[in-house]
Length: 326
Image 1 (cartoon, helix red, strand yellow):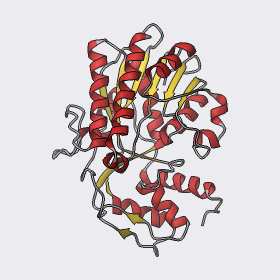
Image 2 (spheres, one colour):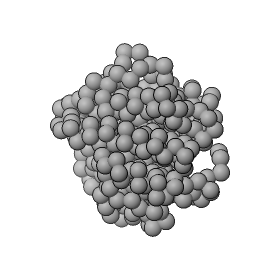
Image 3 (cartoon, rainbow, N blue to C red):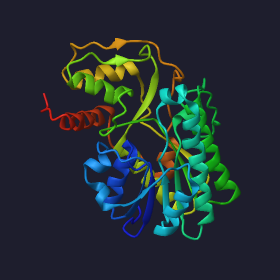
């Protein structure tokens, strides 16, 4: 890993689950961090941990080009990590326009600001997603497969991906793309997601609720492994690699019901069987990733098994709720 102690880094979406843990990692590496923050959420891990006091904060929206440009220019940032997005599939399905505005307009604003300030910006990392592949028949996904999203959230990530590739190939912007599996970890307060929702239910002594039929297959990735992946991409973009996409996942196919049962075992709550609603809309049935390219070209590999990551995550939520481990 390169030396980040002299880097000036802009992180969009800094109060989200990935942004919060990534800022923590950057600070530990000694980087000067500029955090683009839309809403002040006191429950965000970035704020609760006090890490936000160690950053320079820009308040504003990704949809406003001037805000993004100012964050880069005023703070002379040389590395940009674009993690900001509307990330909830159900929210996008119910009301797609704000998702398209944040995820698509927000992305081309970031990319254009980086192009305009190319004298400052030496590396750009764009957070796409495995959802960008859409509902493909061939599994696991490899990076040669095209972005083919169909549902609103998936389409927004496909566009994010294609925009980044366009700026990399057309303008030689030093940009790389991260296609991560389902990222989980402490600090995720979007309770509709399976991991935090299940943990909260079990802590409260309630039956976890599954919106799907439980058979949806995903490739899960612990947030600390995702943070390490972004650092690897930042290094690679600074060293001349551009316009490439990389998959990051455990390469372990797990159903929603499987991960629910796993959390039950780790929390000793096998007595609370999940309630299966089977009313999820706009969800891809099966997704899995081949992360071989990241291993070969970036020397990246996950440091946490699914069980280890879930155990740390459960501990975080027990602390959040002030409950001792059982």
